[in-house]
Length: 430
Image (tube, rainbow, N blue to C red; front, side, top):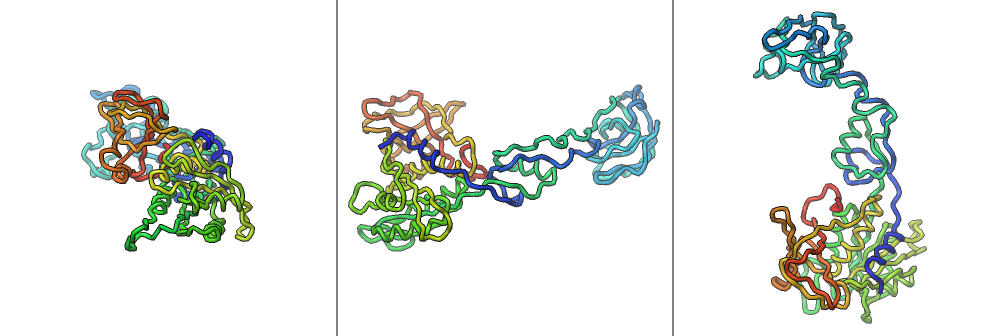
């Protein structure tokens, strides 16, 4: 039996970061950059206008004011995506749109709002004016975005290890990147174990139980950025479990649920040891203290992989889900190249009390709420409603110290928030 902290160290030591893949930019949301990104040129490539307005020479505006507007002759229009057809000379102005190239001869831009442009117009000026009144003085380079002001050529735009979200995708699209190298998503084989299990949708006969862990594990794999590969139920026979594991050897990780305790028909550790090695098989934290990590190999699988890691999670749903959040979650994040894998923690005031009666740290499904900037946590939810409704409504996990200690109402304690029900673009570690 190892501590949770030592078990987590073993997980991170034995779980590798996956290799990179080339992928279309728009399909990389949530993945991690596998390379530094440098643009091929500076952006913008030329001086461009910041606002919609008039490109002018600042020297013409030195005496401009609301009570003494400067009048300039309009000699053309510059729109975004088109090059100016002529240069500016003193006493002239060009209408210019946001993002348009500043014409030669102009050294500043005056906003439409600082001219006699109609305030309520939509689209072109219906009056098609030949001259403009300007009410402000603008310094040289005013309202101009210089070439290279967004990024210089050769400057690093995004570093390796960046998690790709909407802002990062927008940034790379702005410099023309259509393909990027990212750490690929892990494929995770999911195997339930036990003669007592039946598939969802079938009648439940006495002594049987629904295979709920496969559904939960698969959804959590997806939630944390992996791709589940469901292999069904392995019955309580070594050859059946070995066959299922062999079938999963083309994945990057295998997860089993159940069959990892000390019963006569708990075969996961036995088969794991026969196909490789067991790294740990029990931790000092419950529920789910019977949880195993191993490395398995199968030359007969023919997929070319020498070995892959295997998690044997607890069978009862409360322990299985806690095993996933505490051990599999950091493994998946590491495989995806995520650098910050620490679980988010908040300090909360206990709304009720609980005594430490277990010989090890015990994890409770709890309810976290925030009032006036302060977090509060309700610890005894399961005692009030039962464990299954508690799991379904809980939004946090709280570690209860071992026997001999207690948490009293009003104590400040550390709580792990769970965002499982919130739609995720990025993993919940953020």
